[in-house]
Amino acid sequence: DAKTTQPPSMDCAEGRAANLPCNHSTISGNEYVYWYRQIHSQGPQYIIHGLKNNETNEMASLIITEDRKSSTLILPHATLRDTAVYYCIVRVPYSPSNTGKLIFGQGTTLQVKP
Amino acid sequence: EAQVTQNPRYLITVTGKKLTVTCSQNMNHEYMSWYRQDPGLGLRQIYYSMNVEVTDKGDVPEGYKVSRKEKRNFPLILESPSPNQTSLYFCASSSFGQSWEQYFGPGTRLTVT
Image 1: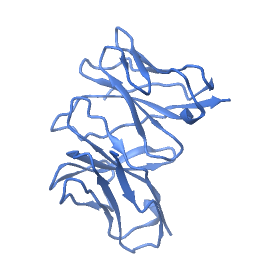
Image 2 (image 1 turned 60 degrees about the vertical axis):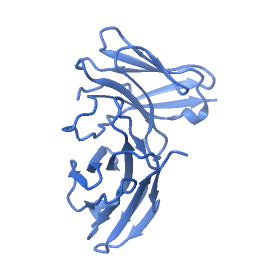
Image 3 (image 1 turned 90 degrees about the horizontal axis):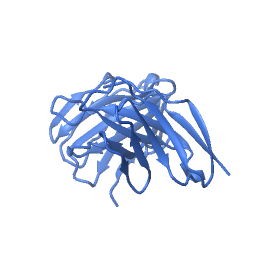
Image 4 (image 1 turned 60 degrees about the horizontal axis):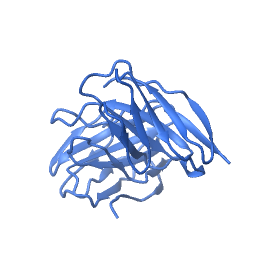
């Protein structure tokens, strides 16, 4: 699985959009980009994933550059409850030989401030 | 509500006293996995299971056992716990859809003295 690079920390004002960047310059053609978050020692929470098209769900939007070497997770209206560590992961789709393990890097600590 | 549950959530035990941490999911997922999380080491996979009666070792299986007799349950067994197994443990499950996103339980904080 390709390696990702994220800034260690970011701040965001409550109610504003939070834009979290991720670099994955060695991503392979069949690898997906996933975002998870972990709110202080709780179980990691799946947010969104994508292959090459931009994606949106009820939690967030994912913008993937055309060359797929980087992506941005957008939380459109951040709240205090969005304060968490956000992890960007790239991985191949399911196959019988895949262990399925998620490799979490250091992630970005997002602090949403009132 | 679709969820992964773990019990107990907190446990303090002594070296050598066998314990089991239960994990159950109600989403009919084929895939289940156990991770441990330690400061500075991130999440490390202990064991995983692709389906009933199919389990395999992850990156750090020493000192742990698992079983998958039913699709919904995937207990983690520590036959003889040691202090280096003090950690935060997470169970996760997933279907084998294209996205393969994993859903995590709330965690079990284990302290072995």
